[in-house]
Image 1 (cartoon, rainbow, N blue to C red):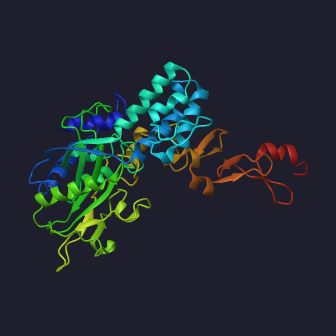
Image 2: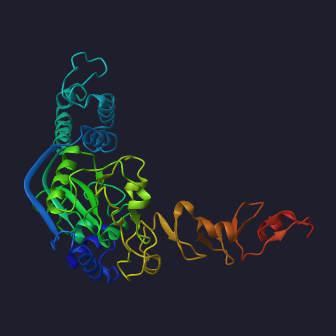
Length: 415
């Protein structure tokens, strides 16, 4: 398991063949096993035998198809036709693509399916065939099917939002939260996938999740909550998860209670967790909570997430968008140099959007982060060049303006 875990990290974080040692992975796997051992009776994964097939909401594949038409279709067809396809799909977005409303001057489209109606948009037979094939693929992918699994396997926490995308994807802004979920004693990953691993894009074959939800349960097993569904909401799948949860956790009552929730009392986030807590924070999912709890006593609260150790050294991580602590990131320069850099003043990692070029005492341009720019620089009032505080400031005779030496020599005759 360690080797597969390490391969996923190296490839997804683009560390390359000469990456530094990921020395904390095995200890993290051991911590996960210890914390999760009671949740599924010592098992890592429980896959139920029933094959499930459900149509995903049409909006999911429609949005993907429109996005493809707008940004990627020109790779198959000429640009003008690509824009026509985008305009056509966008115009008929509200029809679910099952009953086309209109397209320019063509009167006979009403009620037609999208794959057939495309012949009125695309004249070239080869281009039409390519786009129709692509449309059929999007429509087919809108059918969600597979086997339901309850899992506490470390690789399922790591790939919690793969291959779809969320902030907990391997390149997401809250990827460190995947580790936080690994180290708590309450979180189970519930997902739909094929029976065998099919996802190989990061070098480690694993289960591609077509739908998933996180199930959280307290230590006593008498209080549970189902989190937000990804990448879409499906009441039928949620009902199946509830049914299977009743089979696995006998301490849960028959009634699901939505009106007893006091989020501050019954749900706590571990102080070192770096997860995105949909239960409290999601602006897109106002009612994600389904709970099962005894009404005649106060249950122990559910603690979401746990400590978030660096995969290299084991020290705490303090940034949500990395699997590594700041010191390891600095020492091994584990960041995208097109988007980030090291501040020459404080040594911290800085987004290039928040970085300024500052001239030092040797006349060299240096990268300064936002804070160091505000606190340790000055700007020449003539040329508007930014200098570090170590560079001498020259003044005019009134002492009002700040000048660099070059501007001072050019402008200030009386000095």
